[in-house]
Length: 415
Ligand code: UD1
Image (tube, rainbow, N blue to C red; front, side, top):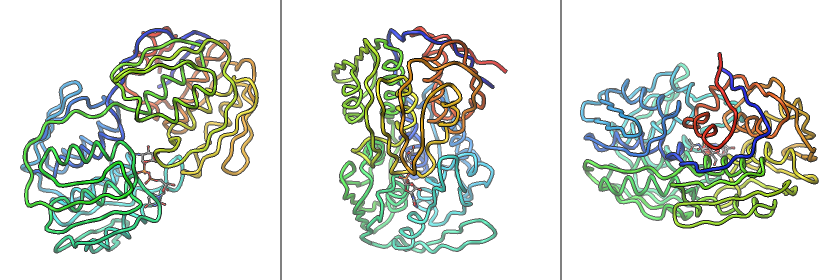
């Protein structure tokens, strides 16, 4: 499938922000821990969520999904192997390892493999699983995890990996051990996971700081939970508005989760107002160039990097964007340059010399956030832009064409 877009249109109106993709995935994984029903609200209707639900069904869970609500009943779950083809489809399915081990004290999964934005190894997951008493063997491309008992341990993460932090928490919830993680990732999605787990009767403390403690419990109860808003979708619509000199109101979001993004938008010349669940943005004129460095939370998010790259192609002056988290997150640059952008890569830095106007042409998405960067470029370009491989974009954005059409964009999906 392709997107066909026609620029240049100002985006104006109201956007309802969906539930967070990156919070949904670990929370869906965590639902299997209670061995009962879990009801999740505000689940985004996106491909990554569908794949995760498919894996849960294959593991023996009953999944009942209606629009943005899902009931997962894991009482008859009887399998602990994540099939290789689905593991490949969704790298973050590695997060299921922690909760399958938590439930059955064993799990089998394959290496998630390389991915479009970099090598993404899982050494931190494996190394620290071992420290909490999980035996790990590799067999014919599969990682076989077994453990008699989760051990009390203090683990220090060499890098604050989001996935490794979540996996360690999930593995130790049902135990009689105590786990302390230092240099833990501090992302808001980990706070959401903690709230979900504690709502089920778990004892997790400290999420949102770099020291997290889990006190194991014997059993968990049924739970209902509403997923937090997607901070990256929020940032995406803000960037789209900024790039098109538009004017938007974003509803059902949380500005506290994207402070560095808001600061950078203001530095680029946008006017921003916010209240509890809403953000208002007005971008009257051509953006000013800005510099960005990605960092673990609370720094500027790596997931927003390509999005800002797309936004800054038309800015006045030269922007310097440094990527410190993933090694291969500039894959959309040759495509943006085909549209007339002037971006040069030097190591982990992209130097973006702003041009007056991009020109629409045929381009190809190579990853989720790089793909949406092309949509942003297309919104600001003269003429038509055709974006191929939109499967990447659909992994993470709910009803993108519908939401964009409602605020004035011309975007269609075609075969
Ligand atoms: C999560 C997010 C992703 C986001 C990223 C960083 C989900 C589903 N995905 O990914 O959107 O971009 O956090 O905010 O929540 N690393 C290792 N060894 C490991 C684990 C990670 O070297 O065992 C490296 C990775 O290659 C990468 C860096 O650490 O360079 C960050 O990875 P991590 O924080 O684990 O990201 P994910 O959890 O995969």
